[in-house]
Image (cartoon, rainbow, N blue to C red; front, side, top):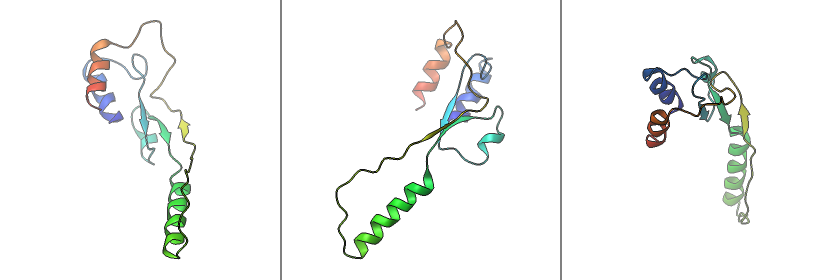
Length: 102
């Protein structure tokens, strides 16, 4: 979705990040090599998967999982698709397009 937002911005003549900043979610190894490299929110996938597997194995072993909540801290990975806000706001036609596609 974030790469589509960059494509839509460019199609309308806007520059990322000069005119519009774009942030993705769920980092992947190739995202650092996009143009521009995408700023993203990275989830701690390995700790999340480990907690899920541990809870599942406990259930299989007959140990009921207590009602609990797992909290995992995401990481903001800043790359080149974001910049400080300028005095002008984001172009209204671009904001409407990006929010309608989510």
